Length: 308
Image (cartoon, rainbow, N blue to C red; front, top):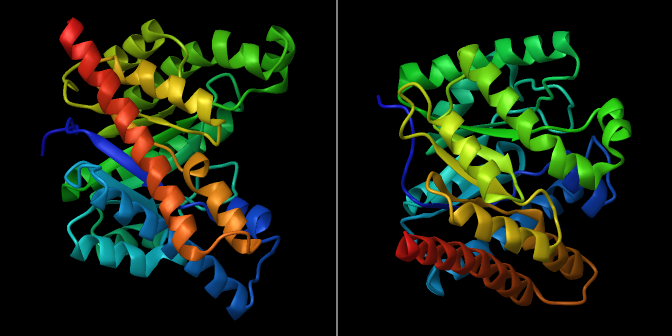
């Protein structure tokens, strides 16, 4: 199986679990049956928003969902039946260290749902704890080798959280994102590749310059990886920042799409739970926002293609 994925990919991620339960529902494990059902129901509203977005013009052949098995198993199965692109999270939620949600049984859980992509979210700072990074790399290499062996597409969501020393060195989170994080992302990707971790798609935090995006794609596609794709994630940022990241990424060949979750669904679901809006209104707002991201990305990509 060839490494990579080059078709456009517009992903609505709502695989949030620990943060979603604690921040949105103010609940803690173990959940009661009613609490669990409320979380599941809210994810169906997000999924309804996704389906509405397709009816409003988001290309169904490029659009997909990323959701978890714990609260979204039936959604994953429904999406697969309807021919939508799907991504399944494999990581344990709420953990600073990448571990499999279902331990050594991770492969069986992937095989139950047969998603388009098996996704791993990983916090990896190359200047951070070396022992932690090595433990994570060992597990990720195992997942990567499984995906290669079984022709399963593999999506790697890379977060590079700042260390306290890095924040002190540069003077805060905003300057870290602009001046330190881009180089650290490259270091992380290079190290992981050299360690045998071979995703088909890198799902990465937004970058504020075209040059940084181009450098990331060049690295992601080095040494026979010419078809590896990159998508930009929203990271819960405000709408203006997400729009900017989308425009920048769309202007760079190799960035094939986006995955914007919290900025798409958080406020509509919060308003729904507060009984400020109806279920139908929440789904409609989610559809509108997801459609906006697709329009921005497609428009910026076309504009870049015309200039080139």
